[in-house]
Image (cartoon, rainbow, N blue to C red; front, top):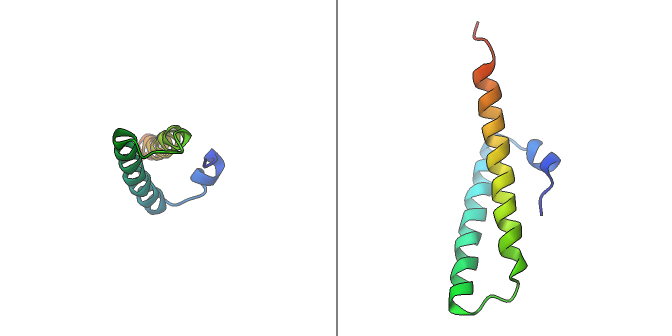
Amino acid sequence: MTKIADIRARTPDELQTQLLDLRKEQFNLRFQRATGQLEATGRIKLVRRDIARIKFVLHERRRSAASQPKA
């Protein structure tokens, strides 16, 4: 599980890369669950929450950048 402070310390490019990796992992976990091979069922929940945290921080940054006045 990634803490929100750790996520905020990363650059947007790093966050996009991590988001892509987590989505791939989420896909693989869902596939394993469907085929009955998944042993660590709690991992699905952790990955889903990490994805949500990253998306929240990315959206937060976009929103703050858009609200700043342009000179």
